[in-house]
Length: 366
Image 1 (cartoon, rainbow, N blue to C red):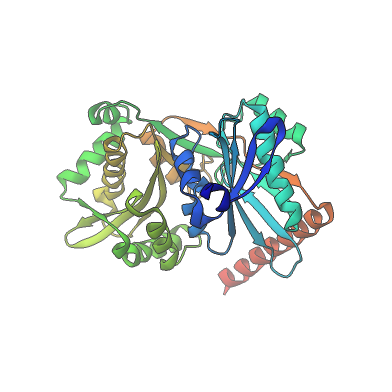
Image 2: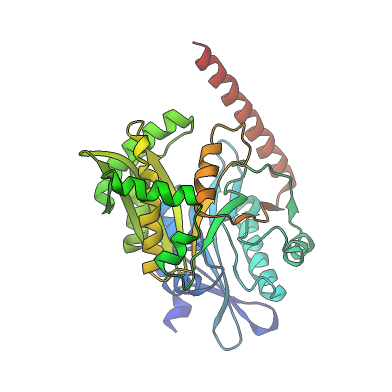
């Protein structure tokens, strides 16, 4: 069939079929990911288009009837100045995590792909709670190892997140679930004359300018304009930029993506002016309204720092006002494919990180 011609296929255990697909023929793969309750924007081929410095592959596991029962989007990247590659499945795999056979088949197939492509490790950070002991035990049985992490952003994706349940709720019911101060600030922004405009790819430069201001204020690195453009191009009508306007100026904004039954607050930014009119609250509310309109079940705020001593603790407090469901995900797990490579790359990364810290201190003293 044409499907067999467009993908690499091999026979897995119990007669099931495993296939690999590339970005150009990932339509069926993406449809499954979007329709599955464990689906995630970073598991789609669209995310592979965003991460252009990585090679993307989609793994499909079918049952005997030919129906997809599991999928896993994987990124593969050469580690600079080494012969090793890193393999990473952000928030994967997508399947019934209690279906041990499907999980094993998917992850084993990815491992075999990694061996052929000289990957030193296969990293996953599945979208499941840290309390899912059965799944975590299964990963350990397969050979994955876990390491302790803090509550901040010391993992590729945030381990602790806010996820608001909006399924089948009206705007009034969702608004009523917010902290009273959050409701007040949202309404205050509207009373003060803040308006929110919905934009597309044409607003990437304007949004990037806001991100530069935010990054300088909060001391974090920012993406360039082309990165935001790739997100908007890759996700099409499922991506939006929201810009808050006040007295003719753009004072806040956010970039959000919808995939299946979830909307993600991907990036947020604000100027140093007019913060007293609470534009970020109104932007957030308008984005949540989009999720309700699209029939999403969840609005994902992503991570935040609960530690009050952290400079970014304000983000945590801001998100908590909208959503009290602060949940711990399982974190990162590594399946080591090449032990020597794993040790060498981790040592090099630690050295690079410490060097960046020393450089930053020197620069700050000047």
